[in-house]
Amino acid sequence: MRNIILGMSALALAAVSAPAFAQEEATPAVTISGGATLVSDYRFRGISQTDKGFAVQGSMTLTHSSGLYASVWGSSIDEYVAAASDQEIDLILGYKKSFGATTVDLGVLYYFYPGSGDVIPGYNSDFFEPYVAVSQAFGPVTAKVSAAYAPKQKALSIGFGKEDNLYGALDLSGALGDSGVSLSAHLGHNFSDDSFLSAGKDYTDWSLGASYAWKNLTFGVSYVDTNFAKGALVSPFSGKDIAKAGVVGTIGVAF
Image (cartoon, rainbow, N blue to C red; front, side, top):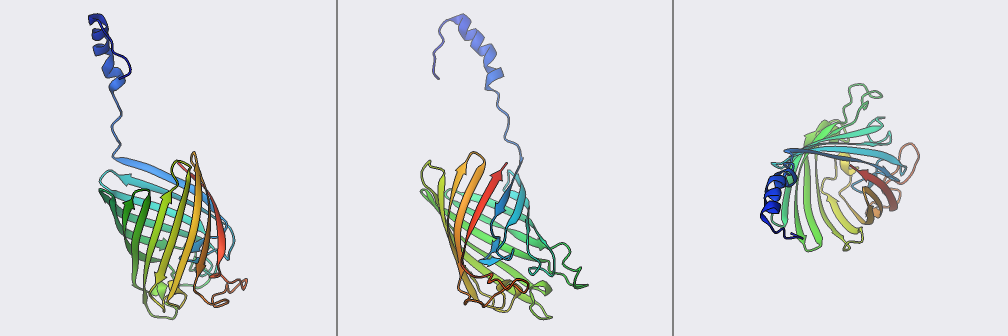
């Protein structure tokens, strides 16, 4: 309290007036957040989904005070990703809970590719993938270990059967004081060598990034690479090496 009010009349006035000023809105049970991002290349686990070109992305999340949340995320993609579909829409249902400096996050993600059956009638490239992640804060640095396992599904098959896919990752992130600058590092490995998500190879991807937050805007840049041999994974349309190392820039706005 900055000032001490003396006198019975002032005290009475304060007693009458205080409730009007002291009342605070209760924390809502459900909150809504979202944003939009422009990226110079949409990389999914190290592999370009946009033929190394730009993508527009957007998201919206509803979070309940219990820890339950539901999200929708979308991005433009190139035709080779899902049989001529030019969109990826991710539907997510999860639960997140913190225990001190530790946060557990688990849920299921459904990958939806509108129009994937237009070129190949009856073809369905949609699939679902349960995930779990555990984050631990060490002062200004947060470490996260995550795993995503997609059970056997037709959409993951390179041939005509069903395949599954397992992906694990380690992420480090931290802010540089109050500068607005954050640094991040990622190391991931795809343990399945015969699914569509692995492009037929048991492979590793990694990245290093930096971002700057200003008000509700975020500017970022990252270096992304995989251990695919040069020319081992190319776009069937352009011939570009979509697993080759590259620098990705981002501009995002949050609300």
